[in-house]
Length: 339
Length: 274
Image (cartoon, rainbow over the protein chains, first blue to last red):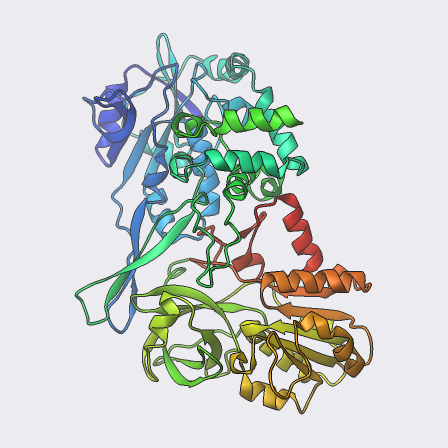
């Protein structure tokens, strides 16, 4: 991996923006961070102490709502997205881990892949813990992992360490005059991550909760109690960067008498009707079982053989958004208290 | 990869009434398209244009011309719309799906009891036909329905009656039958006709019935590796992406719909959310 010294961010934004649409986390009036179109004049949130954008970047690849195909009365015609080249600037390690997770989950999905392959990822090392985050506990940060971004940025007093982490990343900075980074910056980077990871708040409740969840001994009454607190609002599943469930629905078009389009949209395993069949049979009828399902999917060892990691990447968004106080810290504290 | 979620057009080649609120549909590919071969236990997704897509098991597997059939009961919006369709009408088809299938090779030469409840008889039809083709297999069927009007697969059962012992039981008392109650009430009677305890049990029907059947045969000494159940789950994709058909860490559309009792018990044991 080649490492360069980048003196200023706008020069990189200008260069990358020549051939692609840039997006970066930016503050809007309500104070929250959102993924918005960016250019050299933008002020992307690249703070050393990160505030995560409220939404993860997953909607750039797994669209919140999209058309799958149309039916013209005789044929089913695939409607793959036409995606202009784009770059996501300043993606934190937790979100990059989730993108890698979804890359694998959606490897056969042409809609996801069309968007993903048109995208350059510029990762950003976190130099301080964020509020509510616990990425070191689930092996998802705080520094960008190898193979998860095309370019990696890390802030230094003298400028930015810019690592070309993939062939695509190296090609994207062709023509941008960049001196090599000071020789010891990459070595320091490896050592530095451990120091920053050690500054994260204690997360033994997460470790103990995950262990107890995997023992299969969490009392059904515990899940039922948490089910009472679940409003089925889908805040957690919408903001979770690794959640991927969808529903399909159809609406008529004017193309032919019985022409229609099929769309898919994000769905949530916390909805009462998620598993309900036409007959009324509903394996997911109990709210407690649905809450359990969500956490099982995030933390069961049964998935690690396939994905090499848990579905949870430690971003803490579920805790930020849940109106019922059953985000990851709350749930794991309750579970671990039982163990 | 492209086309993963795109149906191919098929037509209704034939249809006839086959029990209360139930129809037997035969489908055929359109034009020069073909339908891939399938194995007993697999399923397909049927699109009724403008009304969505749902999973159905094959009653008869696709033949060399791609013709296949399904028994479909009218229970919801999609099937109600399908029942408005006529011979020749265009529908959409995706499949075959499911890697968890009836273990045909393991069953050959054994004494096999098939236990069906309601329209759960349909997903068992293709494995019954496949086992009937094997002279070494001893096969018996016990089929439970609410009442005679509710029975399905009249033509198939008429042919099977000549080839294997069958007990037809009814939940409600019916004229001319001595088998009242659930299929589980008549296990000894069917086994007497079959000639002994089964070496394998295949079941499809309401999940509570299948669970009770598995428990009963475990108590009678059968290994859970030789009890096979076909599950029904809501599905929006059939290819392990939409998430609806989860069963522990398994997706029924990919790993099922047929599971051994031991595998099902293992999956259910990991979480109560199944």
